[in-house]
Length: 351
Image (cartoon, rainbow, N blue to C red; front, side, top):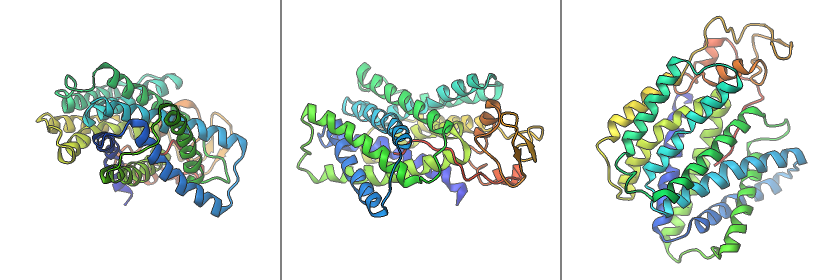
């Protein structure tokens, strides 16, 4: 089952771009669609939190609100506004999939190491592949404003990914707590925008509510659920590498569901993107000995063979661990290193 997790992530994440197009086709504004999507989602989560009698500390609230604003409100505003301005689903997915370039450069700079020839070639193959998927859509897309909106969303998601990967969820809180706070923060933001722009009233069509249900179940529950699991187990570079596969899937899906033209370049583009993902994987060498008992360089604390403290060690060691298991290597990570993941997980925004 764990081997299917990266595949599920790509499919569910791609559904978000299709859902944005579905909502735009109903005539609803981006703010209206996002407000009602989060009204449903946050409402359910808040009821669950009240039933569980959850209480949240100030530090936890501040951190989750920041992640919710960046990884949900700003990112999705960019995608939905791009769709409302005519940017095709494949083009939006292309821009979002360029996130690995930012993540790889930033994490490597922070670790004071170069990307390496293999990862540079992987990034080049991925960028070339996603470019082929939607090359014919760029000229017919949403113009400068639509593209800039999606780019701004992609930058915000990159920031949320790095922030969530750097700081673990405090003990005493779980996934539902993070989902609840982040979704409520996004709902508050969309509510303010809808109030200012008069976007509360939804279209009186069943297609709009079909789009809302689609957006809640597939991209939010499925997409961000898989996003979190992959981020927890493989790190930010693994998550970002898998984004290279979303343009081909989104373009195919939108061609079937939204009658957007399917380009012949989709198939070779998908293959190049797959090559990029595989090249971005990097299995740690025996010399790194991530699972060996000993003392970490950063803290000097002893690390036993049965535990891997994923937030310990030097920046270079954390980047190394983040590259392990971008796709099918996830199930074998424990066998390769002889360790099991710590209960303190990496985490990120939720969709």
